[in-house]
Each structure stands twice: as C-alpha cells, then as structure tokens.
Length: 366
Image (tube, rainbow, N blue to C red; front, side, top):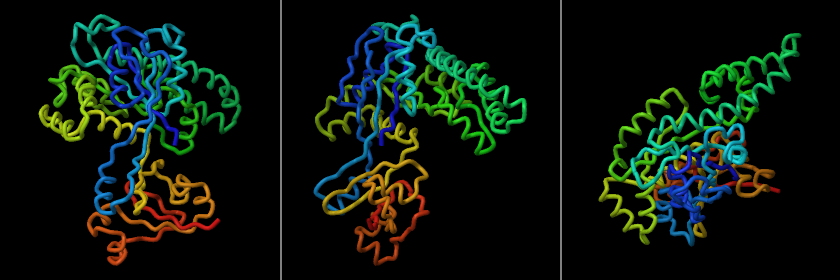
C-alpha cells in the first residue's frame, strides 16, 4: 500500500537526522541549507508488540511486520510558492505525499545555524504554512473561476462547488489551512476532498528538542502547542540527537537500558512511526499460523473483501467469508483451537468492517 508521509521543515531543523533514525536509507545530514535535494524514500517497519506476543504463543517460522513509507523532502524557504530556493521541487514532492510530518526546531544550539538567525518554531511553522496556503489559493482561485458563472445561472453542482471553494478560500485568506474548514454534508466533504489541497493533508508537528527536554518538552514546545490548538493536528516531542544515539546500539537490551536512563518508556522514533501510520488512517489485521505471523495494512473503514484483496486479488474476487478472532481473545485463550472451543471466533460476511488487530482467515473460491 503506497501511502506516504513526507517529512518537511525549514533547513537545519533536524529533518534528515530524524529520517536517518527512521530508515536505513541514509539522507546526508549537514549544517547547511538544501542538504537534501532529491527526496529520500524510506520503507519503515511499523513497531507492533502484538506480533511478538502472538509469536510467543504460535511459535511461527517467521514474523513479518507491516511498513509505512517516509519521504525526506528538501527544506523550504520564504517564496517557495513563487519558486524561490527549491520551492517548485518542494511543492511537487509534498503534493505526492498523503500526510505531513512537520519538523520544528525547538532547541538552542549555537553550533547549528538557523536559516533565520534565531529560534522561533511558531514563525518557522507559519513560513511553511504560508507558502502552502499561497499555493492552495492559486488552486482554489482557478477552480472558482471555472464554476462561478454556472453557479449563478442555477447549476446545482456548480453552486455546491462554488460555495465549498469560497469557504475554503476565505479560510486561506485569513491565514488558516484548509484542514481547519469543516463541512456539514457528505457532498460538501466530497467536493473539498477532490481538491487535493496541500493544506488539507493531515499533519503531525514533530518538535525536535534537546536531551533535557525529551520527556517534558520546553518553552518552545509550549509555544507550538498554543499555536496549533485550533488545528486538526497532533504534536510529538522527539530529541533527534538522542534518537541517532539510540540507533547506534546493537541490541534491544542496550536500547531499553538507555531509554530507562533518560526516563523514556519508548523511543521517539517508534512513537513517530506509529503516529505516522495512524495519520495515514492505516490499521493492521493479522494472519497467524505456524509458517508466519504477519501484519497486513488496510485503510480504516475497509470491509472484509477489501482486506482479503490486500493478501491477493483472487481472495477479494472469490470472497466467501472471513473467520475473525479478536487479538485480546487469542491472547487470553492461548491458541486458535481454544478460542474456537470457547465460541469466540466469529464468521463474518462481505459487510463486516475489519477492526485494527483482527486476526483473520479468509475463505474464498475462484
């Protein structure tokens, strides 16, 4: 499933350092702007403790987790919407992604220069927001010009589109992103979604802090939280420098010991990957057997036949039914047979909406 999160931010905020921690694809990390010119794509394993617990019971030959794609995109500067710096390339790359991981510098370090001279994550956020909003205004103005005339002569579809476009344009002109605009009807939402605006993409603000602020954040993080409180967005605090140190440890035990020493229960990278997965509206169903315990990715809200198709298109075409065990039941009873004997396995048809963590077995006929 080729859904992608794009890592964006101003130059020298820690994007590439963070990307290096996320992926084996090594983006060059250096103390100068535009270090990352071509977008680096990393296929990142999604941490899922459920697979480990199932494997302890099933003892499979192998465990296969699911993945998510992360793209490291060139740093942006003022004027990007007009092609300044690497603006055109940045905007083209970000348009191809499905969600945004917006890295903000929330640490002081005189050895790492800031493109604007001082540390102000809210200003940095607004620079990128403004450039994306300006590009979206161009898009929305072009759409309005196409439907405005028809909307005034009674074309219902054109009138609906014109009203949706106008509402979004008003928000953009106020300096607000398209994701802040809400609509009441499915038809309005459909029209808005079909615009594929840059500022309508779901966003996670990643506050890159120093080691001392890794657990509780700092004054910069507090400023970011206040500035995004009206957005439909999430915030994650990560110390990219610490994460790069964690990545150097060879064993799981060494990493856990280091995390305990600095007061963290889980690495920031793991939390970031999980949040990126959710940001893309992705969930996981599991197949479990002696050969393998495997996680499969699907989009939240998918029905059983669509999920069957993730494994193989023939499974979806010839779908008969799905045998479903809830993860908690499998863990509680200890085996598939014990779950069946307890009457906890359900048989579901084509309308069943698959839930995150469902352990599935599909019956099909081609």
